[in-house]
Image (cartoon, rainbow over the protein chains, first blue to last red):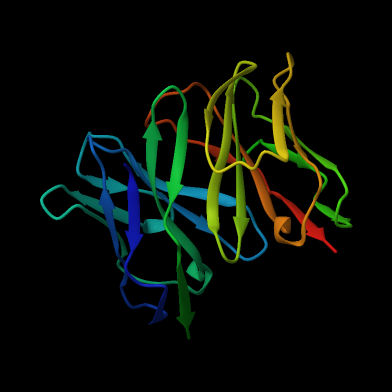
Length: 114
Length: 114
């Protein structure tokens, strides 16, 4: 069965410092992994996705994630946080049989202080 | 703006009632997905339709049903509503049914059951 675990429910950083949001996955086959972001009272926006191509994936707004099979991890990073990065971040694995479902982690709230 | 539209944005109703949520996918997308976001359960997959056919079911209650019409829009029907059905309901769409396909999310319908 597919699942993801987000290791931190809340991360606080200062503006201009690096961001690290941690995610471990469990999958019975080579997974497709995603990071989505949800700003307050907004919908979900795709940040980036991994689909068995390059293990280092670059996304929007300076975010990137590295797929590490040996560690079953897909951590999200950004070199320098901006105030506008404050949001809820979801690590997601795709589960595909006859149809497709996205399995979401519980989310990590990122706070950015000035 | 993802191109996925959902109506209504907000819905307030009473226990025991029935409501219909509507979703229009992005132009060209054949797949529609429904997700529920609540404080206690997080984001959960409900159901996936592809070109009018049900493809996958998740944690969808028997009181809930969905369909996708020939013009590809979809409706999620929630009946015999309970307080616990209060949640944010998202619709997403994608081109096909592939494992790594990006799902584009609508802004959501916020349902409050009183």
